[in-house]
Image (tube, rainbow over all chains, first blue to last red; front, side):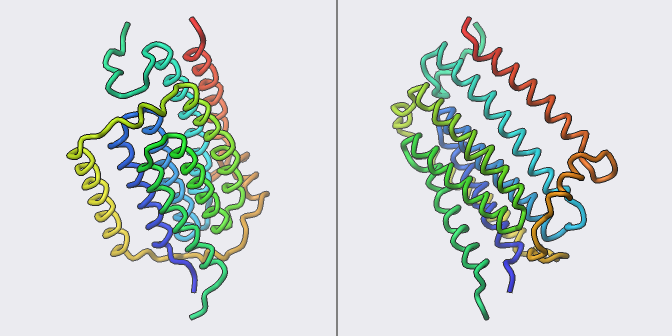
Length: 103
Length: 170
């Protein structure tokens, strides 16, 4: 007996909605970014699983997951640069302190 | 009904990922949150290894577990954000978020379990050979990915320049 497709998808669903819950409840921008990472990882699992079980002829899902990892890394780097810059200006990275976005 | 080694590993990884992804969003210390995120990323890499996508798992370990988590830890320590995590949330907001997440998960799980996927291949097809990945990544034909590869490289360069511009001292 093999592992079913659905089992993998159940894990990624739990991960995705844990990320959604964290994104809604956190007030710290870094903690929100960590939740976004959970969401992105859940979609990457889905791409790999669909590619492996349902469409194994070509490697679309594999490469989509690969490029998504690269884009997520770049996005995180830029977001952290922005957050550190905000901290330098406002001395806080709480969401409620970020009301004025212009000088 | 025999239980194979793959299934044992899968269920251990499944419980691991579930527990740590919930802990990531519920713990009150942000450094612990980043550590639990690291464990979730390890679990994701283990799932790629179980699917025999060894290259993808290695990339996941190197880029996420090796690079991104270090960035997170550095920025957490730089921004001194541990005190700001203790702010109390309104109970109504927590309940609303919980209802959103649970309802969304219930809908997605319902659709997923009643859809009836038809697997066309077995996961035990063997490891994806490295030559296949290399040729697909470097070729310019149909189902080959040279253009996205180049686009990603330009994109990473743009991100480096953007990060430097944003983070420099004025």
